[in-house]
Structure formats: C-alpha cells, structure tokens
Length: 575
Image (tube, rainbow, N blue to C red; front, side, top):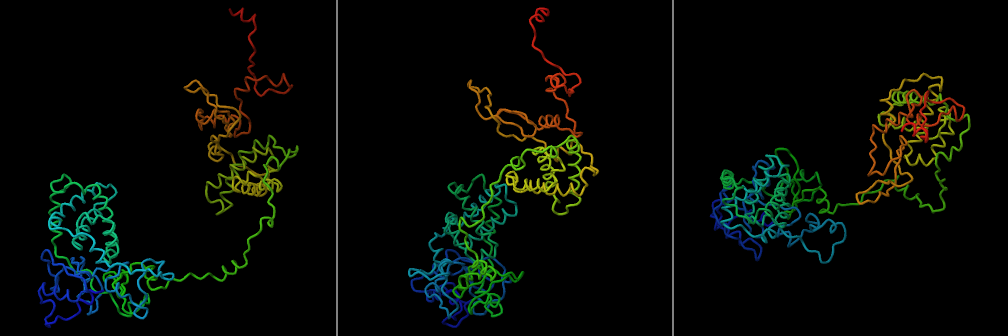
C-alpha cells in the first residue's frame, strides 16, 4: 500500500524519523501522499509506541487511528523495509495506491476483482476498481470530543444490554464489551455511526477481524440491535449504567495501545511456496500457534479465505469429470415413454389370493398356536438374523406384519410359508404401501417356518404383555360408512364421517367426538383374541339366541340369557 512506501523513506535532513516532531512527520507525509489527499491534525496527543513514533495510524487517505491491540511478538518477524509500516489490511478492499494502478500479470497477478464472478469470466468494460479501506472510513463521521469522553457510559449500557440476553455467558459479555472499546480506539468513529451497516462492513474485512476469530463483526451485530433499542435515550445518569463499569472502561480506553499488525507479512519464498504465491505477496501467521491467518497482495488487500485467494489469482478451474463418469454419461440415453416394459398394476392381496380352498384355510390349531409362533418368531429373528434384524423396532415390525397377514388372508401357517403366498404378497398393493416391509416379513416368516420344522417344532409361551408390545395393540382408526350424529351446541348434528377401529373393530363417532383409549381398545381386542386361542365370551354371547336351538349346535355359553318382549298378561300380573 501507500503506507508501506511512506514510512520507508529517509527524511530530507537525514535525522532518524523517531527523533522528528509530530508536526514535521505530518509535513513529510503530506508531501508523499497522492495528489488531493490531506492529513488531518490529531485532536489530542497520542501515546508513543515502543519504537518512539506516534501510535496514531496514518491511513492511505490521511485518516488517523490508533494501531491494533496486540503484542509485537504475536506475529512472524517482518522485513526491514516494512518494519515501521503499521497498516490495517482489508480483505475485499484495495488501498489507494493499488486502486489507481492495478498490478499486471507480470507484477504478481490480475487486478483484484470486485466479485468472484468477475474473475471467473471476461471482465465487463465498465468494471471499476474496489474502494480502499481509508476511502470507506472517510465517509463515516468521526467522534467528537464529547462523544469520546462519554463513550464509557455507552459501553456500560451495552454491557447491561448483553447481560439481559439469557443465552450469553459472562465471558462473552466481557469480551464483547472490550471489543467495542477497541473498535472505538482503532477508528475513532461516532457511536451512532458504529451501529450502521457501512461501518460493520468495513470492520468485517480487516486482518484484525481474522485475528480476533470474527469477534469484531459479532460484537457490532449486537451493538446495532442495542443502539436501535437504546441509542435514542441518554446514557449519563441512566439506571442501566453502572458507575463502576464506567470507571473501568474509561481506564481501559486510556491504556496505551500496543502494535498488532506490522508490514506485509512474511514475503519469503519459503512462506509463499505453500500456496504458490507470486513475488510480492505476504503470508500472515501467528507466531505462538503457527496458524495461517491469510495472505496479502502487493497492494495491501488481505485474503482470509482460500477460495477468495484462488479467485484473485485466477486459479479457479472447473473440476474434471472422472473417466468412469464420462463414459457413463456418453452411454446414457433417455428412454422414450413407450420403450420401457409395462409395469403391472398392483392389486389387493385378497384379489391375488382369491377364495381359499379347504386345505388352505386357517384351522383352530393355527389360531391356538399363533401367539406361541409369534413369540418364537421374534426370538428367531433376534438370534439367527444378525445385523439385518439388529434393531428391536425392525423385529417388532416383522412380527406385527406376520400377525396382520394371518388375520387378513385367513390362511394357515403352513400355507403362509409357501412360495406362492410370498409371491402374492410381493405383488400386492399393500406391500407397496408399506414400502416393501410387508414382503420382507413374508419372506423371513417363510424361512423361519421351514427351518423350525413347521407344526412339529417346539414353540415358546407368549404372555399378554409381550403380545401388546409386539403386535402394537393400539387404536387404528379408519373412515367408516355413515355420519357422526353428535348433537352440536346449535341444535344441529355433526355430519362428519364415522370411524372404525381397525384393531378391535368398534364403530366410533368422528375423531372430534369419540374417545377411544388404548386400554379400551386392548380390552375389546383381547375379548376376541386370547393367548390360549380360545375366544373369550362377551356380552353379545349372552344376548344372542342360543345356537343349539337355532342350528342344533352347541352353545358357546353354558347358560345364555335370552331377552324376550314383555307380554300383556305378564305386565298385568306385575301390576
């Protein structure tokens, strides 16, 4: 930048620069600045750095600001030509010297683009060089003497605002408060201007932002919200301003700043070899950790991200496609709509199976063995299937599907293990609706039944708790025929569709006016499904006509209760 060349020249009278007065220094620097640029006199005396020169920084357009706060030993040693150049490098913005005369390809690369798209393709004829950091800060109003004296009150109120944010820790609050003071000391801008988007953008693209792990931009983001909420009210004497904090931040503001960034980084060939940088580029690293902060161009533009650096050096290339992918893309063809094989339309399982034959129907033995078979099937999946059925939810899903297939198809356990039954399940629309898990359960059950020996095998005893969890006995509501019929408050009835529980078979009102609990559903379910295979009698069995009188068969209840209409003579006798 221009600053790198300003401080490297010898004074006219031959005296060392550190022995000259501040007025003589400003006079010499004014003569070396570009035409039209002026130096502004310092409003107050600045403390001297260890080298003896003023701590205020002279920016490319004459802006003065204290140097960044950091120990000189934190960075790698710099070259002797830039030992006295203390600059604030800005990624994305060139200094004035580079703006006026962008470097050519022979001098170290193409001019810095405004956007990555400008570097990737041909430049437009109306392309303009980027604005320098000093020019950006020159448009922002400087702080007055009164604002400088009262800034500690603003920081104390900002600290109270951050403390009210429940998500912030104490360390973050203290760090953001000190960062705000450092930013004010760096640039000396008005407090209200520091809350603008222009200042946040300028502070974001600096090497100090990269060295602080983006604390500057994060602090200014919260400061903008704080100023929008609190900036219109006075700070001195306010309830949210702690006098102890004001005293502390005044002392912190008056401390002598230390040198943080010097020169253009390490310009040696060894440092530039890592990224193959052209001559004149510099690499900035932390001496304590060795972490690379970024690279700076000969014009002073700082690049924190490698992607921006590659765009600046015009090294962005389209990734090459592998040979295998290239061959596959060349051989691929878009099929015509009528060329592919016609996919058969899925049909329901009942339609695929058709009417069951007498040898295929489920018998009483199948119903009695079903709970024990399911318990044994679950243990078989857990012990013999390895990684395929490692999860408990997968095993429970297969057991539940096996129970649903037995209930829906009405076939025997032996028929469910035959290949034609498995093929019918695979081709059914129910299998597609369950994303193939129903077909997978049919295949695994067929393998289990053959390996276990069929009806000759020994099966485990099943408890009701196991069946409740495995079979997922819970309400499963589907739409049914008819309307709800619930009386509404306005005298009308609810005309929404009725529902039916697919688990227990109960007819219910709509989802808004029905209360079908899990306990009630399981009670009704186990009234018709028992672990022993014997159907439990319900109230319906006591109210219906005995089957021994109607069909000649044996009644399911020993003493059924038959309700008869009351006769006239019986009513007179009772009266």
